[in-house]
Image (cartoon, rainbow, N blue to C red):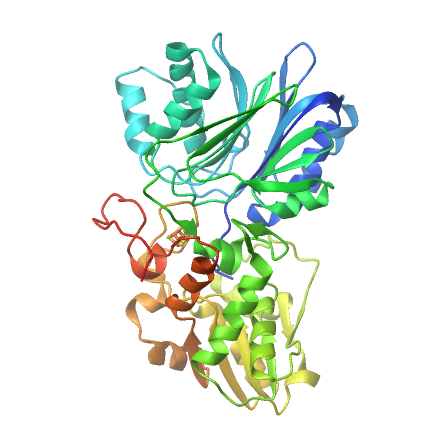
Length: 469
Ligand code: SF4
C-alpha cells in the first residue's frame, strides 16, 4: 500500500566508563525502527581508538546478533536506522558513515535531507577533486567536516561551520574516540533529544528510545544548537547565529513519530488525541462507532470518540506477521492482498454507521481499497476523517511524499475524492487546528506539503514563509 514513508532514526551514547554502548544502541535502534526499515548500523571505538562499524540492509533484529556477541564494552557509540529518501538502498549507503583521516576519525549518523547537497557535491567533485563512495547526503557532511578540521582543528568549531554551510533538514550525532556531538538544523525540522543513563549521556531522534534503555529525558536539542560531550561528561554548547527560521515537521506529530514520544515539549499521543477532537468539532456527525486505521489512525480516532461520545471500536484485525517490507509485486497482487494486512471485523461493522479515522490520503487507492471491504461486510455508512490537511506539495526535507502528480488532493476537490474512494462523507483536519497544537507549546511547524510554503527557500518553489496562518 502506498503510504507516506518515515525517514531515518539516530542514536548516540558516551560514558566515562566502558559500558555495553553497542548493545544499548541496538536496543535504542529497535525503539526507532518505525523511522526506517531498510538498513541499520552501529559504530563504536575500541580502547586503542580503532573505529569499528557494523551495518547492513534489513531490520535491526536481523543485523546485529553476531556483532553484539563479540563487541567489547566501549565508551562511545552511534547508530542509525535508514529509510532512503536519497541514495539507493545498498550497504554502502547505510549509516553511520565512517571517516578515518589524519585530521579526523569519526562516525556520523544523519536524519533529514540537505537541500543544497547536489550543489555542494558538484563543487567538491569539480573544484576539490573529491571522490564519493556513496550516493547519500551524509557523506557530503563528512567531507565538509574534514575540510573544516583541516582549517580550524577543533571539532566543535568544525561542526558549527558545517552547520552554517548546510541548508535543509539535519539532526546529527557524531562520535569521535573522545567525544559525542549532537547537532540540529536551525529550523529544527527533525527531532533530537538528550538523556542521561547513569553517568552516560545519550541522544536520540525520539524520547521513546530513551525510555526503552532506561535513560532519563533531559531536554530537546534546540534548533541550531550543537552539544558536545567528552568522555568525562563535560558538556560544551554552541549555537548558530541565524535562528530566524523555525519549522518542526508537523508530519512527525501526525504520523512519523511514535505515540509514546515527546517532541519539543509536546506529547505525540496527546497531540493526536487533540487532532481527533478537532476533527469532530469541525464537522459533527451522528454515527454508531468510531474506528481508527491501524496503527497511525488509532490515537486520533480515540480523540474523536472522546469529543463526540460515540463509542470507540476496532474495525480491522491487523496481521502482525507481515512486517513492513512485505513486497507487493504488481497492482493486481496489491488489490488481491489488501485484506492480508488489514481485514475488517465483520461482527463489529455489520449494519453500523462508522466514522473511520486515518492519518492521510496520498493517491486515494489505499483508502478506496480499505473502504470497499467495509461496505461488502455490511457497513451502513462510512464517514472518513483524516487527521491532516490534504497533501498537495512535495517535501524537500526528508519525508518521502509521493510525486505531486500522484497526490490525489492536488487535482481533485474534497467532494471528488470522497466520491472516488467511496465514502459517505470526507473531512480533513483544518491546518489552523494543527498550528494551534504547536502554538500552545511555542513551537512553529513546517507545513509545506499542505501549503506549498516552506520555512526556508527551496529550489524551484520560490516560496519562503512560516506557518503562522
Ligand atoms: S514539507 Fe511536510 S513532510 Fe516535509 S518537513 Fe514540511 S511538514 Fe514535514
